[in-house]
Image 1 (cartoon, rainbow, N blue to C red):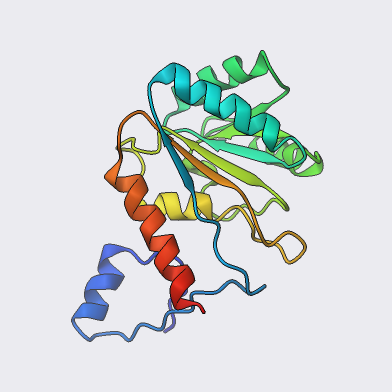
Image 2: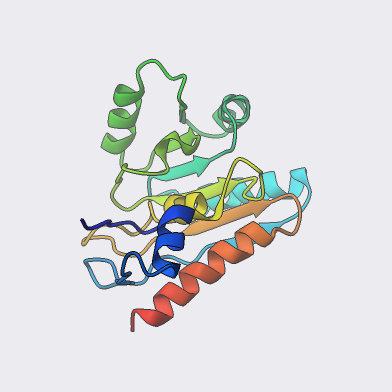
Length: 188
């Protein structure tokens, strides 16, 4: 049996450590480019919102995914960002999730606020990714790696921009960034 994952869970790591399975690391995407390394910005609420709005404008020619930790925060962020730009929201409670994702994919430079429901299995060409409250207990290192990994997936657009916004210095965000940087070094 072969397990293929960018983010092995604790059980797979344990089985590897015990010698029950062999691990081969392929730290390179099919197009040969590095994983995008997240920028981390830490500060109070107003600062984070200003950084997010500036980032959204800077990335205006790209589709943009903004991950948040909770459904309530997704709804609040959707309302807030709706003041400045057209955006959609996608959570586990979104009734027409496939239609929302389809509309987002069809837009050249749309914005979607989402929860971890879109952290895996969704590819949007040329997307930029922000994770708001990246230090939140809902997120783990593997999830943050997966969210960051939404950017730069395609052969036409192998690079991407990733931003982590935290309310406090975050060991979790730093560890995720370190894991991505080490994967990129090992891929050379």
